[in-house]
Image (cartoon, rainbow, N blue to C red; front, side, top):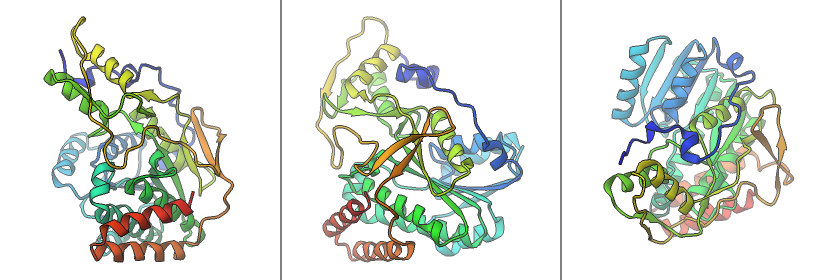
Length: 359
């Protein structure tokens, strides 16, 4: 039995072929330009950094708060040495540090990936989730705008749609904050709405593979639970095409195939990773805090429209404009005050209340 997921293609892991992955206009958006990535050493940031380096940017500003993973990325990219890189160990909530980094690097295109993403941890730590996912976003938007950036891409999540969790709620508020900023700053800001991505750290695929490797029963939350999945190359293409789209202020997402049942996914992984004839034991452990049985891709006010990019759709909303950036920023300040006061139960309710007004 092998625990090496990287011995299989991501298409094999999902049991489907990958859609076309050609880029349209993204090379022109990146080539010769200064590009910044926050969360650059994360499980999406690292692959995005490597992909961007292939598109001949003038310079990369790579920002991450996690020293060891940033060091690992530095070692890897340093060996290649094809693109000038500024390495920045920084917390995106540190506005003075972000101002200085952006003022010095003057990035033209910004991908803001730094965020907390684990749903159950967000339920028990809503103060930190709000602080990183909203205050961090606001700091990066404003620092990027002041430094003269022309494009800004924010990766959101299907968990932002009708969210039952603090994480999902912060993602919905962050979508609104990003799009509303277009009316205030001379910078085209857009959103890439992700589903689950194969290859991210802590994903259910990684957890199940580790259980298979250890010979343990596969722990699943509920036999009926489903999730949408895309591969890492699909996720990177979504980010790059969002940056390259001629119309800013959009929400773009993958035209995702049907959701996959976690039971089917577990059995498929077991067949891939185990010797033929091995028994696949499944143990149900119950849904964790903030999780739902089935993810939702679109809210009741949204519809998906075709784009010039095969496999990608644009999310259109009938709700009208979001509240002004200044008003949303005041709402974020109120959430941060509640978080600072340690009123965690009240904070969770306020996050979800605000998120639901933005559907």
